[in-house]
Amino acid sequence: MTKKNVVEFRAMKQRGEKIAVLTAYDASCSALLMRAGIDVILVGDSLGNVVQGHSTTLPVTVEEMLYHTQCVRRGAPDAFVISDLPFLADSTPVMVIENAGKLIKQGGAQMVKLEGGANQVRNVELLTAHQIPVCGHLGLLPQSVHKVGGYRVQGRDEVGAALILADAKALEAAGADMIVLECVPSLLADQIRLSLAIPIIGIGAGVGCDGQVLVLYDMLGLTSGKRPKFSHDFLVDSRGIQEAVETYVKAVKAGKFPANEHSFS
Ligand code: KIV
Image (cartoon, rainbow, N blue to C red; front, side, top):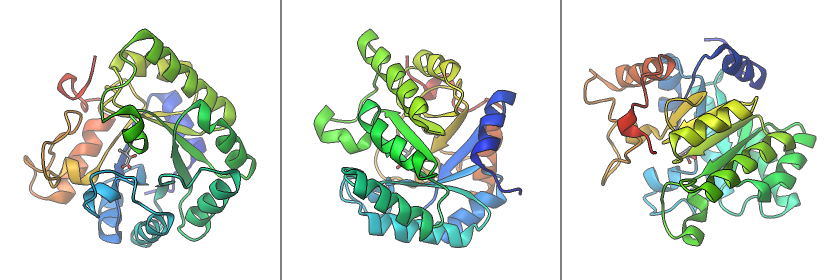
């Protein structure tokens, strides 16, 4: 498996080659993901839910993100790793540089992800000026759960859709190299993908995105409670975890996942 980078991801978008992304939080899973041919590993702050058992991602700390990023990096020395800046880790310019710096320098991540659009432009510019690749995150923002009153599909009305599109353009102009788009109508995701040169990685954003991401525990059927509509249990029809992840990678690359039943209108 060759080492991937931000230049390669843009080229993949131009070639129409889909980017397969999954979360991981430890060395065994990151090694398995690499063996299965994953393009990017996201150390998501979803670890607050699926590893720590919290009901939101808000309690996750930078030190915890650093610990899990280090674990993932040890298991997959050649992986392209994105690490999430957890809630409030980006609330001042000093903090955003200090915390992103920890995830890159001590954690071994190649990119940091932060949630938000226009409100994050200054942070994205700052990180970009310091040569830190940034992945934006738009649509459903789990760190804003209390402010928006729950987890729901975003951008369904005209005003909301226009705002998300404007946010995506603002993030790209500020220097972002990738954007995760969560739970938005497929048509809006298509419009955003066509408007931007950087890859758009969808989760509940339809098959038109440049790539797909899922939470590993969701796609292995490990998460307790109702599986999100946008996910799929790949383990059910597989002989094991390795095969389930390989099936996911192949389905993403072939444009077979997500299907309509995993998408929103
Ligand atoms: O934290 C996470 O796992 C994420 C994905 C849901 C995109 O941000």
